[in-house]
Amino acid sequence: MLKISSLKKLVTDSMAIDLGTANTIIAVKGRGVVVDEPSLVAINEMSEEIVAFGQEAADMSGREGRDVVVRAPLIGGVVGDFERTKKMLAHFVKKAKTGGSNISLQAVMSMVSDVTHVEQRALLNAAEDSGIGKVYMMEEGLAAAFGAGVLPNDKRGSAIVDIGAGTTNIAIIAKGAIVHSTSERYGSNEINAVLATHLRRHRGLQVGIETTEFLKTSFASAFLPEEISKTIAVRGRDVQTGSPSAVDITSGEVYPIVESIVRRIAQTVKDTLTELRPEVAADIYDRGVILTGGGALLDGIDKYMRNFINLPVTVSEEPRYATVMGLVKMFDDTKLLEKVSRNELGVLQNAEIPFEA
Image (cartoon, rainbow, N blue to C red; front, side, top):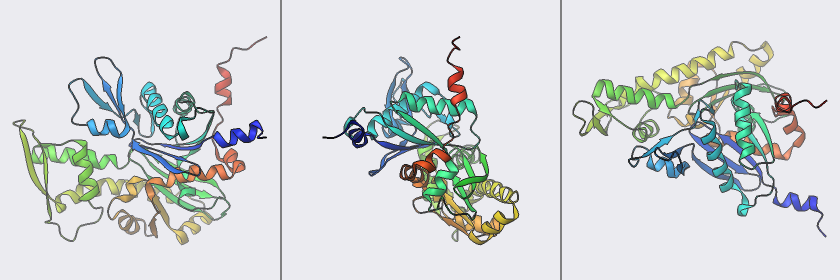
C-alpha cells in the first residue's frame, strides 16, 4: 500500500518560475519548460476585469478593442501592479500544473539581486496566492549561472551577464554562491524604446511594440553591419497626418541607436569586473564571461562585448531558458536549495502576527 508521503511525491509538481518583465517562463521537474508566454494582461477598462493573459493578451496588443488595454504588471523585474501580477501568475501556474491537480506544490522563483524587502514580499505573496505550498526565492544571477552550466561545487569564479527585457544582472559566482553582483533596471526593452523614439523624431513615424521588437530581433545588430545600406520598410502611423504610412530605414541608421544601449550594458559589465578580488579576477580573465537572458540573442552582442571588455565572451545554450533551467536543477539538491534560497522573510512574516501574552 502506498504511504501518504510517497503518494504526495507523485502529485507534487516541483515548479521553477522565471517571472520576467517581458516573459514568464515556467518549467516543471521532469517535464521541462511548460509555459513560455509574455508577462501581459489585457484589461477591460470599463469593468477593470482581466479578459486575457500572456500570449492571448500579447496578440491584442496595439490592436485592442475599444475598452481593452494591454498592460505589463511587472516593471524592471519587480511587481509594479500587485493584484494583476498575482492573477497573471495564478493563471500561468494553473496552466503548468499536471492534469489540473490542486495538490500542494513547491516552487523556486527567481528575483533580481537588488530586490527590496517590499518587492520580495510582493513576489512571494503573489506566488503563495497562486496556490503554491512552499516557495523558495533565488537570485537570478545564480540561477542563470547554474542553468548555463556552472557547477555549484566549482571553487573558481565564473561571470554571468543576464540581459533581460527590463533588467541586466551581472553575477560573479564561486563555490555555488554569489561573490559579487550588480543589477541595473534596464535591459533589451531600452532598444525598443530608442528605436521608437528615433522613428518618431527623425522619420515622423509612430510605431508599436510589435514593430520595434521585429526590428530588434531580425534587423538590428550590436556590430557595425557589413552592408550599411541594407534597407527595411517600417510601417506605422504618420505623426503629422495621422494616416497609415511607411518609411525605409537602413541598417546603418539602426546600428548607432542600438549600439548606444549595448555600450551602456557593456560599460556596466566592465565597471563590475574592476571591483573583484584578485583571485576572482584571475579566474574571469581565464574563463571570460557567459551571456544569458533574451538580450543575449541580439545579433553580434557577444562579439561587441568581447571587444569592449577584452575577455572571452560566450552565449549560453538557449540563453532565454538559462534562469529557469538553473532553478529546476535546484530540486535535485535540496541542501543546495536551502543554502541558496533567500527566504529570510521569517521576521517579516512573523511581524504580522500579533504577540500573544
